[in-house]
Image 1 (spheres, rainbow, N blue to C red):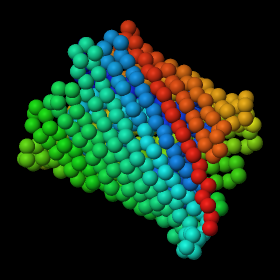
Image 2 (spheres, one colour):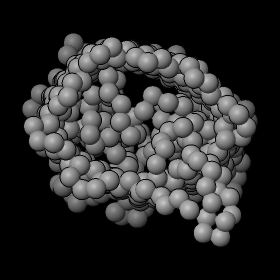
Image 3 (spheres, rainbow, N blue to C red):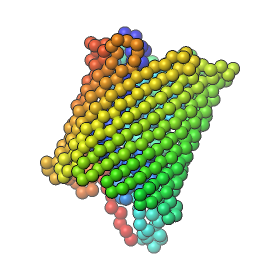
Image 4 (cartoon, one colour):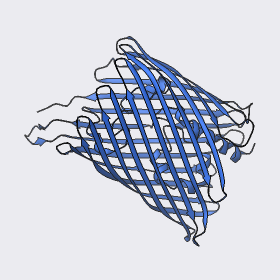
Length: 469
């Protein structure tokens, strides 16, 4: 089978079922439940949900260090294809701010929704204190993330392989500005480097930048406003010569939170504008523009021991490539609609729940006047049990159907995932989580193909109690 053709089928499948892999170790062990429960990287607040740095001050009240990571091996038996992943090699911001639509290899390298491999340090100080010399220490919170991830693809029949490697670094700082208002600043950088085993192609993707904003906080309502700027660059060197795109990306965002005793309603809106100029062999080749926006909202109602959640998201993106003469070569609109929800229980030693997610994707190629529709349904259930104090056993199951609507009578993909894991709180101020997922996939297009995933997740957190002078 033609490898490029098969890889394009792979990307259709993986991009649509990426939500089957949760982005947090605890949920990875309990069926990827993320609507009805919150956790350290999954809080319904301005920082986690809306990605607004000004919300970082209210995110946590203690300092801590976190080490987390994941690994994946996915094998396609008939196509002699293996994916090996360490962490998340294609971060979401790399997709948002880098000109991925201009990169041909991106169409054949999937994005797995994995836990990034990184070490995180967060310092939170919510009271005014004094150091050893009597100098005042005002309330503030700051954090630093340093990580490395990679994704490798291997064809065992001819020994060919290629890979993308992505080191990353980010900072966040937040403090009270004045009564009821907090300030937040953030910066980040990624370096995605692609290479093939024959060294005929080398590609780099590099967005870096930062931003800041403010939040308003009351007992019930929290509002946040933020603005990001990134400088993005893409370069290609290969048998066809060299190519480079570079330019600017701007992304304002807004977030809101309404919180009562047993009710949380959180929402966010994000706009993205990217403008990149291109050259090939030092000659002008036009420009790439990307305009997009996304909005999402979630509610969580938790009376007594019950949990009921609802989730809605809409994402729109329109990349346009025009050559040096002003002719449009590429103009496509991508729309994604997500509708999800779930219910569960949380009692003394048992957390359990059921969730569903429906995703509808629409791709409208305005140049060829071709429209492609697809949809995906994900059902997931799981539980967390604590038979022994501070020891948690987790398990779950995920079922996913994906219909790419390729005008074929039978083109669906069915995926089953079994999850398991455990957590330990035995050590003072320390938490350890381990999870394992086994996934098998069946495609109607190629019923004899056997696709299996082995995924491991790891999480370590140590809380530090600061000494007050």
